[in-house]
Length: 226
Image (cartoon, rainbow, N blue to C red; front, side, top):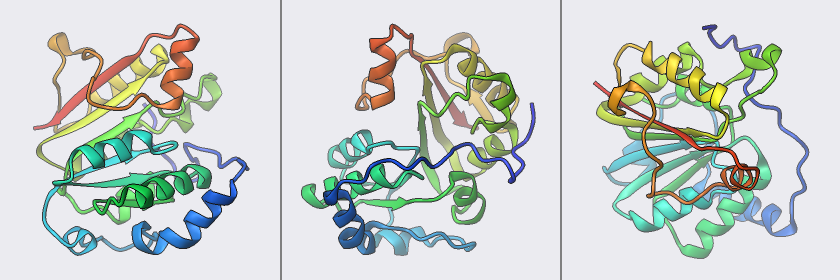
């Protein structure tokens, strides 16, 4: 497995169409919910104004799952990380409409955010749902789940914290299983050390729904910080 050279990114920011409402949400609600990137550790208690269980969703898309979790668990704090501005704008609009105060949002590369801003042993859960599988072999180096980033994820979880992943692309599922199994400090919770059953406590993502329409099987993994 190759590590994640920082000259290589796991995403390409495409010029997606921003609606007027999304533009307005970014202007009006970023000061309340947004977390600007800087190479300094965040004080999470200060960021949320309390001490609570904390979870991060990397690549939240349109934010449907993240907003649903935050609304269902007001006692928990959530950080969403997404590089595509239309999705960020849509989530900000949803948070404002629902009046949710337990979510913060970063519009930056998750690798940088974890390397520079997330303190060690500060998270109870990390979700990475349907990351770009980068199907072509020459693009595999762009995949988010690589050994160096896996080690960073494990370091930021509290002992007993959970790392949950899902994909509808079996070769990427096998890749993630191999990387995470080799990561010191993580243990696979699946019987037999493979994949877990499909989760029922999250909202289906847009990419998940598209995969289902195409007849793709869903592959899920859950690892625990030992």
